[in-house]
Length: 145
Image (cartoon, rainbow, N blue to C red):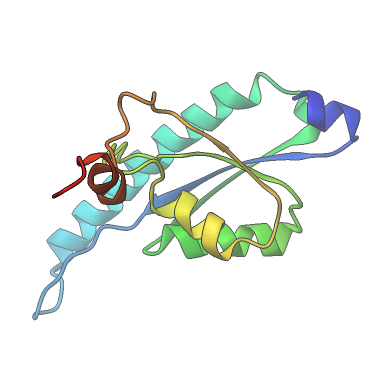
């Protein structure tokens, strides 16, 4: 919020709804298509509510919300960054999955590896919650093993 005000810039609050994956060898039935649409609609409403709550914390003239649906959320996020010419990305270390085996989730890792803008990652897990990497476990083993 302070960065936005000080730099006279805009904030983009973004959420990518991951499209359901249905590995099949046969065409998807009309019934399954309707279920997918219902799930996507529900996810869109939830994302919209969440971003609207976040938006209230900012100057409404400086905030834009973007909700998109994609089967590849990471690529969709990178495309939004390029399209909107965003010059600073802030994201949480873990998204919806909250998997704590590693300090960063898939989308955060894609920005670390492939991002083209400055990046701020907000770690959402404590040091105790993040599992040790295999390298850290091996490094802790006593000498002679």
